[in-house]
Amino acid sequence: MITPLYQPSTERHKEVSNHEIALLFIVMALACLLEAENHQFNHSQFALLAQAALTIDSIFGETTLTTVQTICGIIHYFYFSGTTRLRTEAYGLIGLATTLSQGVRMTNHSTYFRH
Image (cartoon, rainbow, N blue to C red):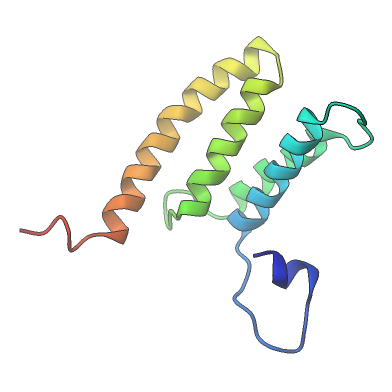
């Protein structure tokens, strides 16, 4: 995912999905939030960008592992942000992440579940 973003070339790379960009933004938001010494970047801006990128494509239509990882990152961000309202929203997202992860398991290994 990082190579097409930072090192564009004339060769054709795999297209970067919106959910992969959302994962990148939520990792940056967590890094800025948990940085102990220097708070030169606004972590909430990265978190909002991650949430916006995640909502461009449907999370239910084509659920991938990246989608589940992004939602788990958002859960961690909400929990570490410190406000009670966001922690409550994090608990709601845990159920969503669980449901989506079960769907990823079934679509990736659909022959496993056939009798």
